[in-house]
Image (tube, rainbow, N blue to C red; front, side):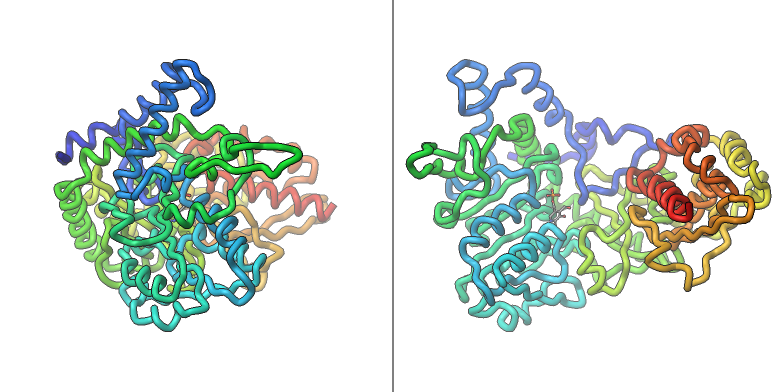
Length: 558
Ligand code: PLP
């Protein structure tokens, strides 16, 4: 019997009560990974502190306990998705590994030149790249199912795209960008009619609906524990037993064998072990088991109804923001919203929201072909789950409103200085400016203000040569050496926040000699500014990518 009560549910996630940039965290990046309840965290710790031992191998008590708990987890997954037997549940690192396993085993052993693999335009890279690699090896070709104007795989295209040449149909149950439930039953039926196997990417569906693999009738269903309140590094490949039995193993090693000999043919273990070489992620499996208990306790009509209310409310509030443009029309099926904001770079909005303590995602969301299909370079994604609240949605919408008012980005700081004119002093000026500003939101504003002082690069200078790779957004850098052997830089970016960071970085490197540039202690500089700990890893890496580009240019000019 499951039950759902918001505050009791939410209280179980310790991370939801932390502060980020001195603001209560609002975590709206659940499609990337969900937070973990205390019980899952405890299981992880308990395994290592109470019964850490390898599974399946030894005949001592600890190993027996670990093995029992490990195999019980498999049974729980079997029941959770209603597969026929535990032999059909294979542990993987996650959804991505599931695709690679099928491509490298069933795919390599079955596909021939000219065979067709059918995907859709809304797939995650995990469900594209393994097939491209397979196609390259085998000569198979990839065909793509189009989407309706509402972002679902178009049922009307099934007969045309899925034909007797099709051997594999691999599609997402729910797109990680569009949040739409695809008509997978119809897709599976059509694939079966032409004798193709079906692989369903369940990464985004698994935490938002009940899954019954037998009722769906698919051959494979893949998902990751970390998107359903479980740990990272563990996932499930459900496969129909007959198919799994017919497939060669994926990787070789211990556990996946029956008998190994130098003189006779090595024989492989029975399912599911045939696909599980080496010591598995035991702590991951056990805490995943607790996550399933947790989800099973709550995943019922009440929780799904609550998620739907949240979805409706968030959709209504977002629809009120004039500058906001959803990437596809209509309401999504799970509480996941993707949009752009007119006149603003996605990364700028995400960074500004971060300064309010709100975690959202921006970029291509590992779905570059979908971005091209939608004719956008990227978008913002807000993804909610059952521990999020209406109040959080309100605060998020109000914060977004504030960011979008000119007032926010134009708030003039008293210290506004022309850092570019104070040669040699620029980095000290920046440091003293940032020392006066308290809190990440203030610093973020300063970065945005500094971005405005950057003189834009003319279009013809924004070339592949000047492009800085490793930056989350597009950024360019050019440079020449003057008669004093000093290097003069110009830079630009499509994101305001990166333009601000460029001003900060150039303040330290512009008008300096090669020796000064090489010797400059970037870490100490960012430490002094109090910035490094606030920059996202990708933006942090972007900062280093800019510095690396500066040094590479200096090296090139000699
Ligand atoms: N498929 C979809 C739809 C996803 O959203 C994701 C992750 O975001 C993946 C596959 C890959 O999952 P993982 O990184 O856990 O392997």
